[in-house]
Every structure is written in C-alpha cells, then in structure tokens.
Length: 352
Image 1 (cartoon, one colour):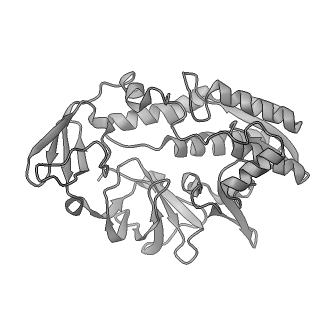
Image 2 (cartoon, rainbow, N blue to C red):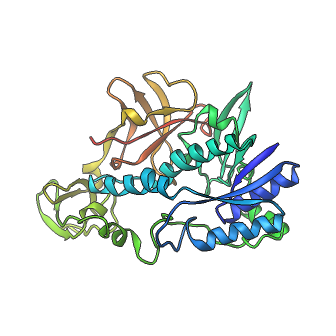
Image 3 (cartoon, rainbow, N blue to C red):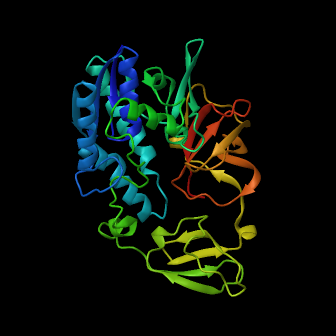
C-alpha cells in the first residue's frame, strides 16, 4: 500500500512512519508548513520541520514539505482571533485537523495516488463489516480521539493510525530501536502558532484591543477584582479568579465584552444542566443519531466523558448530572454509551 505519512517532527509521527515501512508499505513523508510567523513550540517551528526531514533521511524515505500557510491563516488563525473577539474559546487544533490535515492533505494524497494517509495520533480505526469506526487510543493519558471527533466514514476508510494501540513508553522504545533522533523529544503542549515564551495574551494583543472588565460575584453583586483582558477569561475557569470576601473559590460563569463585566460564582451556583450546540457544526461519523439518543459527551481534550442526551429539536445536550459551564467555541465529542471507546460525532458549543 502506498501511504503518505504526516510527519510533524515529533516522536509519534516518526514512529508511525517507521512501523509502516516495517510492515512493507511504500511510505512517503510529508510535513505541513502552516505558520509563517514566529513559533517556538508545537509543530510549526523550523526545528520541527528539520526533525521530520532528518527522520525521513534515517528511514530512507522521500520527504516533502507542503505549504498551507494561507489556508492555515484562513481556517485556523483568523477564526481563532475572531472567536476571542466575540467572547468565545476556540480549539485551534481541532480546526486544523478538520480543515487542513484531514481535508486539504487528504485531497492532495488522493491526487498524488496514495492509498492511505497516516498520522501519529493516539487513536485507533477499527473496521466492522466494511464500516470504519474511530476509537480511543490505548493510552488513556495520551488519547487524542477528542481532536479527531469530526472524522467521517469516508476519511476513516483511508486513515492509518499505527501507534494508536500503544502507550507512550512503547512508542519511545520503538523510536529508540529505529535509531530516530526524536525518541526522547518532549511532547508539544502549546498552540503551535503562539510562542510559548510570550503566550496567548501577547499574541492576541498584537491583533485585538483586549477588553478591561470588572469581576463581579453574580449572587451578591460584590466586585472582587478586575482584568485587563476579559477575552482571556474562560467560562468555567477558576485559575486567576480571586476568592470573594468569604474566602471561597469562585468560578467564571459569564463573560460580557460589551459591558466589560465578568461574572463569577461559587461552583454550586454556576453549574449547568445542558449545553447548547451549534447546528452548522454538528457532524456524525456515520448515520445521524436520533433525537433523544443517549451519549457519553466529552468537552475538553483531557476531560472525562459524561452521560447526556442529544436533543435535536432544541439542539442541546441534556446532562445527566450538573457540570461546570462550557465556553462557547469549545467542541463536544460524542462517544457510544454501550461501547465508550467508539466516537459517534461532534459539535461546537453555541452561545447560550
């Protein structure tokens, strides 16, 4: 099989390429040039492209660099900035997967005559009676099925995830065995187009006028602080929010950029029972789930899936148990109740 491997310069995609070669596939590596600005982290830095090229040399395979900087800016960076300007909390990694890696790259692979595309994601693809399902990765601590929740049957049918059935230590052992320079390279943790040394606020201030706001207790009306960048206050967060006079912790419940007001409250005061979903973003891996379907819903990359009911009429997720508020712009991924490793679909949280 002729396989195009998306090589980010990290250990996971490096091992994915090496294992596919050992399995007898005809492998070609491709690194995506996505960000034209400064970067010192993630998979967009010059060092990462160089690592991918060097790994390809060690493995003895051809390596290409595909330039998608304009598309990346249009589909990922600009919507990221616009979402913050609208008081939302976007997930750029998911948008990159949706529009770049599993759209443009897949299309190019087809045009170039490849039979499949492979990545180093910690997730799995399983086929049953000719139908392909996305499953959680074997390593619970590294599972990336959440960021792949929008993949459809058509995409899954030509996707290979060679390391999805391994834990991270096994991946590094394979990299060391293969003599790859990335065997001990740390995992990237940050948004790839934001310099880790400067952070999200610096990035956004170069593109937006951030909003000063007062932080107010939603129940008592007490002003407990201020912020110079309300856009960076995320619904549900506690970090950076000072306790009220009673000394109890407070959590963000609402961010209103128009009035310059951030509301906070005790956890018990801000819990929600449903999550609104954006209709245009609702995607199912296969057939659409029926109204009233029970699902396990996960709304953060490292969160725990919670029982919920999908309501099409009001386009809501009704939660079985109260939860912290979820910021508009975040993604919710649905897993099967009776087989909780299987992904059913995904949607973006709407403004309530």
